[in-house]
Amino acid sequence: MTLVILAAGMGSRYGGLKQIDPITDNGKFIIDFSVYDAIVSGFDRVVFVIKRENLDVFRETIGQRFESKIKVEYAFQDLNDIPEGFSVPEGRVKPWGTAHALLAARDIVDDNFAVINADDFYGRNAYELLSKHLSTADSKSFCMVGYRLENTLTENGTVARGICSVGDDGYLKDVTERTSIRRAGDMAAFDEDGVDTLIPLDSVASMNCWGFTPDIFGGIMDGLKVFLSNLSSAKDPKKAEYYLPFAVRELMDEGKCTVKVYKSDSSWYGVTYHEDKDNVKASITALVESGEYPKNF
Image 1 (cartoon, one colour):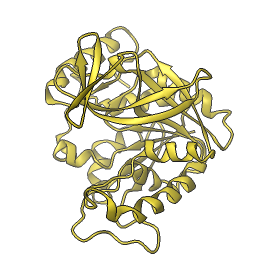
Image 2: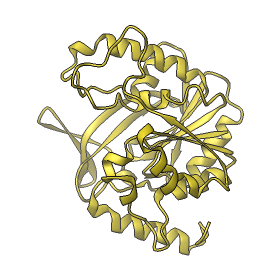
Image 3: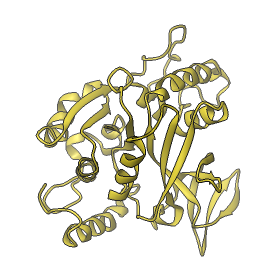
Image 4: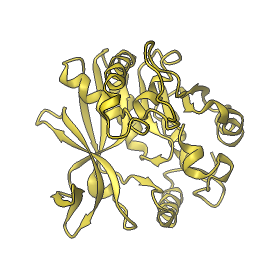
């Protein structure tokens, strides 16, 4: 099985790959723990989706860390990689979003695979759940690891999360992107058009931790064509993006896939704000000291 890691935005978010901050005293990044967890959960290949111009520095800074442990390959997100008959709006430099980023791996990945963000810590359980599902999944049987919203919030500001509606049968019914989510006492709240809406802290949040079969690529390509056809009506055609949850929801609505939701009680860790780093570092260090991870791997 393959783990696809979406990393095309790392350079811009971190001000250059060489400036990525280690999350442990011995120089480990969050991505080190992700790949380690994937390997021990049965994944045997990792594909990094990056910008082509970052290949040398990415391989030097990150990729080479894993080449002796797992098969490593690269796919490249390219703004100009869009279906025939469409063109990039004049002046646009922003990538097309996470669905388009995953599409970059379509010529490399031909087995069942998981998808994660490069800079998020999901916990070992997520990879075990993904591996178990993908080992027996048929072509239209996708999955997602969902987190308790409370375990994905930060005390240092607001966050954007995909809030999921899950049926009694454990399958995803809908996922809606909510921005500016924050803790509000014993609830969470998000701002929508200037009005606060409360949501329970035990809501299921999507953190872009998915399990797919190769069928997803055809679905994304079809959806991307529709997205690009409607681009002129977007609020800002130079910034509009086609996100992975949008693509999945469209396929669900068309009856082309099902998405089993596996709920994880683990805490998600990520450095959304600079002030988050100390807490993330302390939490991961505690996992190492407890024996969850070896000090050197």
